[in-house]
Image 1 (tube, rainbow, N blue to C red):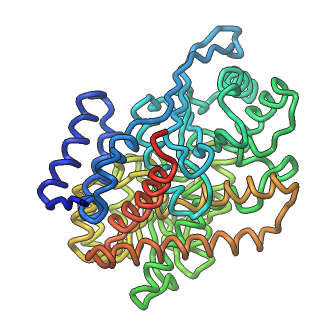
Image 2: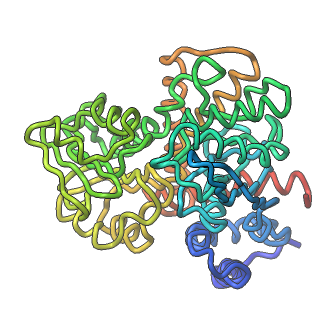
Image 3: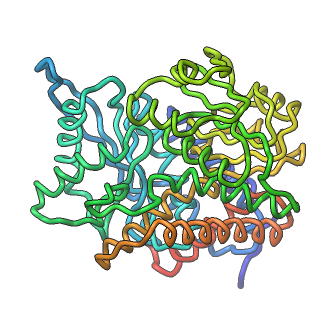
Length: 454
């Protein structure tokens, strides 16, 4: 006989799973935050599908299949030996090989990597492509390092990590601090050690050696495609909208570029030092030159553009806008920033970064009727295009920019439809957070049931 749970019992269950996570790893606050957001959405799912509880799907999902922590020794330009710590969390492979980026940043620790890997499980499920969830990185900071130093670090990092990778096992990509340069050094070392040209073992590669068109642009483009879908659901569009984008890295740059292409005007972007305001519309090509070529700071923008203002420190969310795209890092948009955005007339917020909006800020925006797109849905374009890159590598094929961009737009439209329909099915129409969490969870959970206890 099937036993149905009451909502109170399901609430106690999800709270109990979360409490166990906190007790087991008390210092991993970002992971606890990510897990809690998902778990709180799942009470109606558990009531409808008691098999998930019987087979301990929640507990199994919240515990990574494998956690790797390793030493990364390397030599700087002065001949001094440096030592960093490397990580790879292979979280869940129910749907396919582990897939998720590598982040090189001083803030990286096991808790950060677990939070990112946990999010990746559901994000990857939403794409509809056969990829599992994982994440990795190091507390190495590439900022201010020479190409030689970055190369030597990447070679040491891959010397240890390579034994855990493979196109059918684990396929990393880039993230903060890891672009085409770093992927090149990593792939070169993998090729050297294994004596195999396994293009499908890393994504985000250069176009001349197995990379895919649109991979560089994908996360930013996908973010704006999702915003466009949310607005269309309300009978609106991006044309003439004033947009603020936090960050000035890969995601932010290409979100700004696509927003301009669809008729919006991006008026502010930022980095960790401050932000620039250009009411005529941010010159995205100039930002690309500053960040990707010169590897400089956003304040350099005002040295070229007359009339642009640079504000040191402060919050880019102080700039009034109708569309806000947090594309920098986790927990950057708090409750105070959300109030400021609401006062400035914001109608849509979409997370280009992973978990950039704090839970109180999310609640405030949703209660005010703002269209809110969570990161696991909004920024899935990057990993979706990574999977398309894997497909091209597997068939020794190469698609055009236009063809790949068209596929990306279709995937993002599909993710939006899935999140919207799932939210409606579970009685919370318009709540993309709940829709994304439930849709991603159900797909992974059903597969885990099919595979048995593994």
